Image 1 (cartoon, one colour):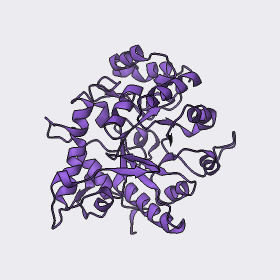
Image 2: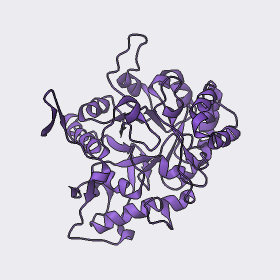
Image 3: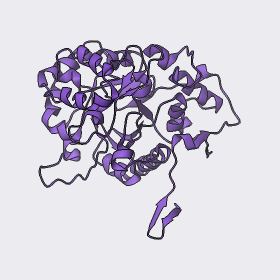
Image 4: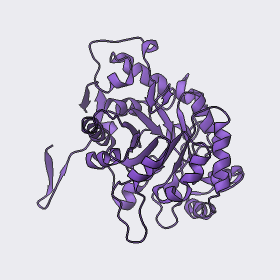
Length: 368
């Protein structure tokens, strides 16, 4: 790939965001009703390629169940308010009422409450009792401490999610999590990420992960690019990781690792573009945080927003646009791509003549 000169001492390759690309219509079209948006990871089949991000403004046990009943996968943050407090409803309301100047400091105080193993067990069992696929998320730093509690509680899918997750983390202070050994010993499929480059993704795939999350610093509530100066445009990141999946498929003799785009997906068109670049599914936060049922009450934030020493996110006001069902399936009363996300994906696939997600990954795209 051609590199561009930044200055005499530095070169860099050009990378593209979802806003930079567009999907090209083909010679064939179909009826949207003939299109399948289903996908399967390990033994679990989902009717829509949507994972709800493990963020307190998006997922409570109740909303995770609702996403599951709508055919997606709700992932609960097992380091969030629901595992720190018996009933965090008043605290969620308080966070939504804070002024911008004091929001970060107050959130740091609230999230200083310790995580309680009995609440992890209670939340996951509460979700399991409804019959949906149960998924919970821990950061790499907390995985060793709580994973046994999570597995014993009956989780179906385990997510290890951080701003960036490396298969080669080096620490002089503590023994790092050995992902390969950890995943090998578990009896449940593991999704791990984020990553944003071919090589990092290939290394994560070699650990035995069932899926990798692609994204770094691009979420609506992230300030990683401003704070750390680190970010990777998502269209290029997804395409690079999809190339790693293809090469690992050959290397492993046929083992397929699912690519899940996680970040910079704010509108329905971004979902279509993510899959067009090679994603099997998407993990979304801000679009679902706009649901009337969302715990954030029209506000959105992630775990980066309350980091004790270096916050790399913020609480933002995004408002509400409709019920969870309307946001996923319509009917839409807004022309801006924030409602009927699945209907828009179906129409994009139908407009280009594809019947399923795997085929749609082959659609032509152009740089605008």
